[in-house]
Image (cartoon, rainbow over all chains, first blue to last red; front, side, top):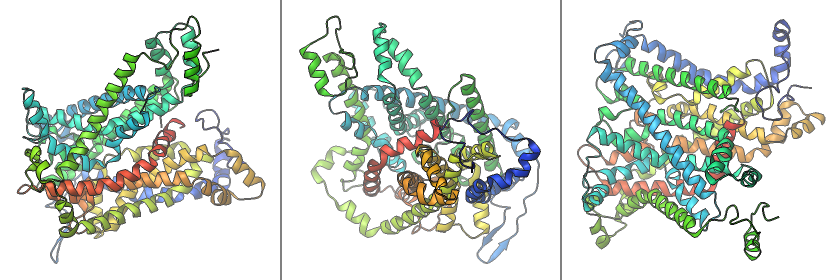
Length: 334
Length: 302
């Protein structure tokens, strides 16, 4: 029996059993692989029912003008039939090129890119810095480590409210800035400072994960490499540049990809920090939510269209990222 | 040689007694200044990590809703009244129940459905493998905005809005592919020879999975379960939209209800937040080490 024998090493490329020819493959595919298919059936069914069907239905909605006034709904005992109609790709055209598309889409798009870039950059650099510090022989290392992952351990929806109290006008941060005679920005009202605060809170929440992952990566680097580098007279910086960074590459590419996806999709922080009060500080995800559920009438079609665009952006990005990694001949991230 | 890997304090001591000529400082041993700087940065970072949470705890002890404006006054009138009020006068236990039902439901269904698949993609190669993995990956990165509108429509047609089952089903759409992915990473670490031994002794692939691999994979199952649990626990968007009656709120929604446009009961909110955070964080600390390995192992090993 060879059904289960072509996967032992965990390497992705080059260790699969050679595929038989096309005709043969179709013929024997069922016979040979029915175990595998039987085992993945539950997930396939769940994905089909819970993901693919809603996805298809959502795509259909984006081609209509559905909103909360013309979809099927029940008010008391009266059932109202859906009256929305098919309008083709007008929603997409309207979002991308329509009037005021800059205010409605492109400004949020740019802000989302800035937000993702800034947050992931900060997560990574701060996480790496702290991981390097924690990777030394240091008194109290475990204690530092335990305290530093606290922002990850406490649920985000709890900590965001802590930040809201601190950032509120008259809250502790502004009182502190005032005693230093520094300007006290309106963190939760002024657009620029809203964005600044959002990035700050998200950085605070996201660093621990990066730190722990990179710390794991650092600890798996073979210490003889450092010895060899030292023998060759490498400075601390050169060791970092030519031993540490290459050694972290596979962990880094994974966590950076995860970080980008998570930050791009980050809903809770912006939603809970500002609610509906900050239309200009909404990234695309929260903005799509606002269109679909935060306003009256609820614009389901446009909201779903934003969702589709977001998904398209992520898929395109991930494909390029993977291709770029492959070109640099790295182990695939994810 | 003094340049062997040093791991213990003894190795360090030894080198101080007999320093090798020509080597000023051993690797991993730093000057006093560098060490002080490291401690300084780590202490600062720890304070930043700790402060917002400590502040929340501190505010929860103040009896008045505007105490956050005059934190200095809290010292004089610290009280646990907020906690007893939250536990007695609000729907705290209703929220606890619904949060547990939804999170545990998601966890159990997610792990149960995903386990065989994780094993199949870890051990077997079949036509369509790559496409299937791609689907699993893409499903995990769905922004909530993609599914929330169609889900809302479908659930209202099925009368599942404001029901636990509806929310559990929605969460399963992310938890199932996620668990499958995470479990694959864990199954990959179980030696392949175990499967072979089972097969040689005449077990079918299902038998191998059920009798040999599944018992060995308990830690992996626990991590996958725990991760689904905290994801469902902390989810905000779907819960805020789909749960309408205030006894069915999960904590993520319930906490928002303390601050409305008209009234902000910040002291009660802080107390509730602390009550929620303590058990979850404690649990988190118990499993965090496995969690990180699980999250990145699934990724890096491909």
